[in-house]
Length: 130
Image 1: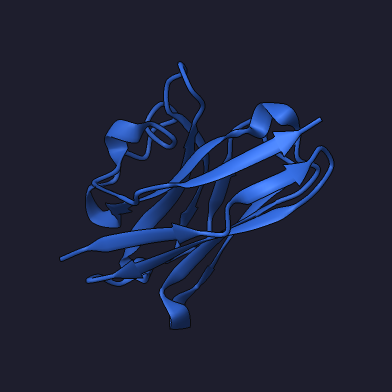
Image 2: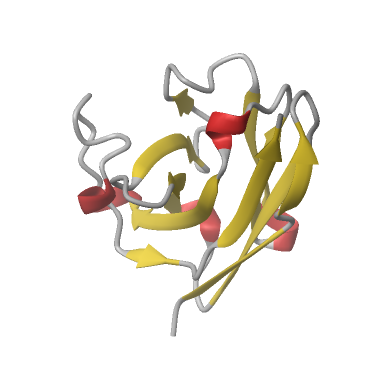
């Protein structure tokens, strides 16, 4: 059974950094598109970044471009999200998600849409204080 487990969340001050990890089991990340999402209280889930683990292609939301970096380690079946220059508005529960590449919706609207992803982790909390 496919399972995703996030780790690495925590509390940091504005301008700080964190690295989130998403460990996959039950399937191979190299055959999937992996995404990071976040959801703040009272807000909709927002796509942050994705990586096509087969080609290495990445895509970022404008709100995190230049500050966040998504990467993969196929040997560890793990995807990472390096977050730098964190801001209070980055505070949210962060989730990783996976979608089979063969059925992925490669449209601009679909890249970071939660409905494009099939498997989800339980989330890890990130809190950024000013």
